[in-house]
Length: 569
Image (cartoon, rainbow, N blue to C red; front, side, top):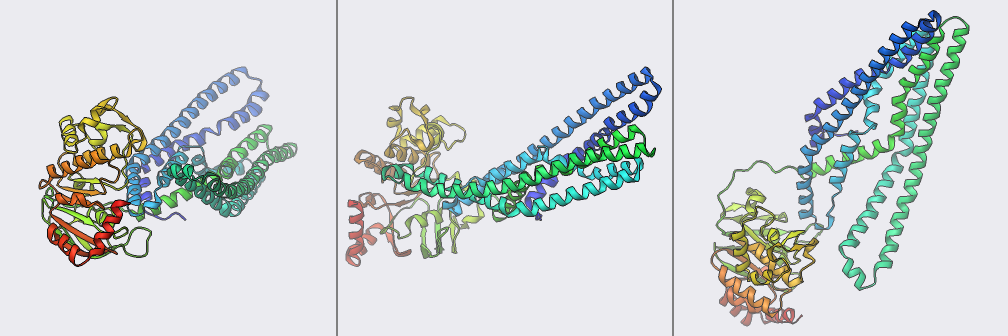
């Protein structure tokens, strides 16, 4: 049973297309009576009267009706295509945003399955499978016409329809679990492939390909077995249905011949009855033949509807003034997506606009988690992060993001030019791009690239080295002078020249933005105003740089040792 929800609302908004398709289906189904009526007239009027003029005009009328039927067929097909396109326009951006919310909350569950589900629904709504549902309501009308021909025709057609409907129910029960298992097995196999593709370097370097391929083959075999079984069952019932329909039409001819011999119907009715019988049963036959596609689409519908419910649209918010950069964390507790234990516990500190704060501590202390909390990437289990006094959740994420610069630990650049990456794929502002590159001390390096700022980058910026990617990412973070900048290990891949350039950049932007710098290297601490020390998810020290360093040297020498070990590593 399909549950009402956002997806149903989107379909309802385009219900006029469905009504138009149903309207054109009326004409199509009425005109489907043209062949049997033509046969009826030929056998009962033309053959008996031997009138060529009657034959000519009947044939002319039938040709016109066939042309009209073709036009209506085309119109209802086009209407359904329009409907599918409208559904895509209504939901594609919404699904795109929900996928990114999924990625933010659950980094390990990155998947475009929801977009595939939307495409599956859209494709089904514009294929012949949907015609079975549009034509099925005409089944009683066709049977009524057969009753008008002769009661025996009507009862025989009704019995045949009941048999086919029973086959449809058997098909549903027999294939329900098999199709579901097949689809789940396929998704599991595809997820494994996606994961392997994201880690090809590690797999090739450590000779893991054969072992992982064996794992994939096991999942793929499970898919093949369940798919073969469900397809065989679906094919069995589809063939039974087709055989029953053809046999019913033939038996209808036999019944008609008997009634002709008994002088109860005319020869024309014998032929016309068989044709109408075939047309009456066609929707049921088509429904059974396309049942697998229908089941897959219904699963996509239910999965997509639940997905959209899990990631609802952001409610309307009052547009707040552009941030100045003051940051306050109040008793922040955070549990990373997919984890059970918190990585931050009761962290509280405050930065004024223009402060530069270093965030230090041993590995797994919660530094990157705090960065994601400050940026609003991961939801908090408790506490609040405030920007200029307002809860960060009161800002539109995209609006706030225009005033934020971020260099993550694992830098990713996107397919496009260097200039497009620095400009965050927004409108190209050449002056602002060059200014950001100069602030990041990467302008000269970019000019040495084959096409300078117009150099095309592959997926992930693969045409650049790790250090070059990190420096371009810094320029992207500084684009158009953001008020909040978070740098997570920005010097992790830099050589000595790159570290000097980074230090120079920090000095240049100091005081112009609130900067949080996560680092294991103590040499850049000379540029900061404040230091926050995290250990096991708790804030153990926070204050002015010299005061905290003094505390670390006197009270907690082990913390300094951890920093030196990390630096050497």
